[in-house]
Image (cartoon, rainbow, N blue to C red):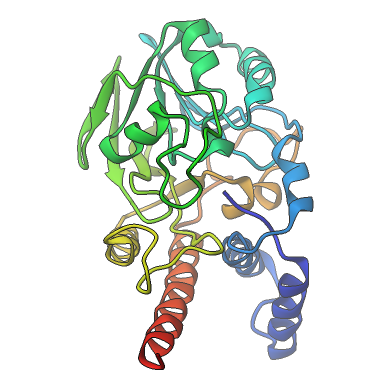
Length: 312
């Protein structure tokens, strides 16, 4: 889940412009990505307008397509043996996803596997409907599988009530497992913290005689109100975040996308009508800087919680 705090964004941008460190090209874009990721943790309800806002489907690179909305990201990976759909957005996003898939020359009914990056309602609410419509199997990490199957009730941070239609999980996934479908080999990466079972996925895309290392990343954002040390939201949450940052910084990445368009600078990198170019989403430095920015915020919260605990 995410939101954007415009006043903080404006202040940080002004500070960097005064310093003269971020003024042009990709460096400026990377700053905006970092700020968007940082601001994901601050609640502003107006930002949710972008969650339901339609956006054209488009090709990211190779057989990876973005078929979600303006900010809530949904990804289609195509193969000659059927397709994989990652995330679904809101409950009423299903028709938009179907139309985006159709606009790219594919059919939703050819989806064979459903995946999610995090078991929060804004990324999972359409899974049950799509599973029923396509007959696809739902695969998930063990710790997110529980939350998917009870509709968010057992989520340690936002739980206590059903927030999306429960979806049965047909297979549990483990860290490092390789999902095979047709000629696709998609590696599962457990990147917990945001949820207990948050996951990213990586693959190699061969395009124009080159190999591109592609990551569909679940970023380690810390939702407002989540506690890391002092009465932690769940046991081991602080260690989970630290592990995720460490693992993501060690990844070799050429192209990356994330669960929210704002996290990976979608609207700066691609605009409707823009012709396909495999280099559009190449941004290894942007990924590293976004992870490091989240890690710094994590360290700041850890420090604040320790001070609070020591003062008691």
